[in-house]
Length: 192
Length: 192
DNA sequence: GTCTATACAAAGATAGAC
DNA sequence: GTCTATCTTTGTATAGAC
Image 1 (tube, rainbow over the protein chains, first blue to last red):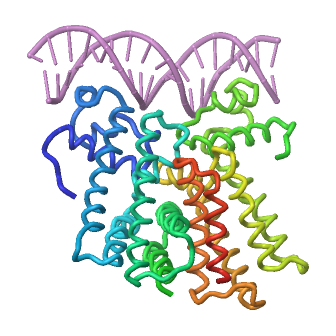
Image 2 (image 1 turned 30 degrees about the vertical axis):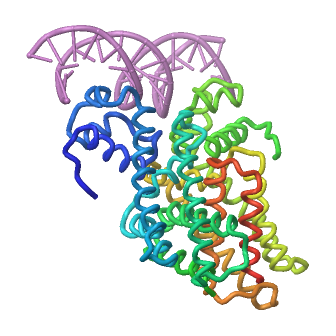
C-alpha cells in the first residue's frame, strides 16, 4: 500500500481502511481525522460532506482495481489462469491476517442505509467484476484451461458471491485458511 | 412470519427487520420504536441497552433456525436433498423480492464495529451452520444423493459463503434470479 | 408498562480567525 | 489549508409521573 503525502489522498486512505474494517455507518469524521492526524473540519475542506467522501473512496477503489484487472485480461503473455490468480490476490490478502473485507462488500452489507449515489458506485463495482469474470472464463474455456458445463454468468456469479461471502464469514469464524480453501475449491470446479 | 402481540417480541421483530435491511449501526431506538408504535424509552424497559437488544435478536434468530434445521436433519422421512432444499429456502425467500439479507450476514459485514457479546452470537451462528452442512453433505454422500470429490468442510464452506455472498451482492445488482441461479449452480456441484 | 422530560455525548456541518 | 468555536440534530440512556 502506497503512503500518500497529499492530504486528500490520506483522507481517502483512512476512510477506506475504516470502512473496510468497521463499515460506513459506524465511522465518523472524527475517526478519520484522528487517523490522518488532522481535525475534523479539515476534512470538509477536501470533501463537502460524508457522502461525497464515501463516493470518492469507492470510485478510487473501483478504478484502481479495474486498471489492474483490465491490464492482466488484455496482456498477451498472461493466461486465463494467470488472470484468475490475479483476481484472487486481493481476496487472499484481505482474508489472511487482516480484519478488513472488500470495500464494496462492506458497503453492500449496509446497502439500504447508503446515500443513493454511493449505492450507484457499489453497483457499478459488482457489475464490472461480473463482466470481467465472464470474459476470463470464456477465454479460459476457449484455451482449454477451464472445463465446466455451467453457463458463464452462473459461474461468474458463484465466484464473486463466494469470494465476497468468504471474506465476510471468515472474519466471524477466525479460520486462517478460509480464503485459500474457498479459492482452491473454486479452482477445482473450473478444472476438475 | 408470525405477528407477535407481546411488546418485547414486537421490538425484536422490528429490530431484526431493520438490521436485515439497514444494518445494526445504521438504526436507532427511534427507528425501532416508530415501527412498533411506541416511544423510544419504552424499549429500554424491555431491553437494558442497544447491545442487549442486538444480542437477543441474534439469539432468537439463531435458535429458531436451528430448531428447523435440526428437525429436518433428524427426520427419517427426509432425504439429504430435502434437507438441503430446506436450508436454501430462507435464502431464496430473502433474495426474491426483498431488500433484506441474512441477519448474521448483515452483522458480519460490520463485525468489527459490534459489541463483543454480539460478535459471539454471530460466530456461533456461522459455526453451527457449517457443522449442519457438513453433516447433511456426509449423509447425502452416503446415500449417493451427492457426488463430489472435495473434502466436506470445503464444500460446506463454499455453500455457506456463496449463499451469504449472493444475498449481499444481489441487493446491489438487482438480479431477480440471483439466488435461484446460485442455488442451481451449487446443486450441479453436488450432483454433476 | 408506557409516557414526558431531560441529561449527556457524539454526529455532520458551518463561520471565521490565522 | 488548517485550526477553534459553535450550531443543530440525533444518538443512547435515565428519572420520575401516570
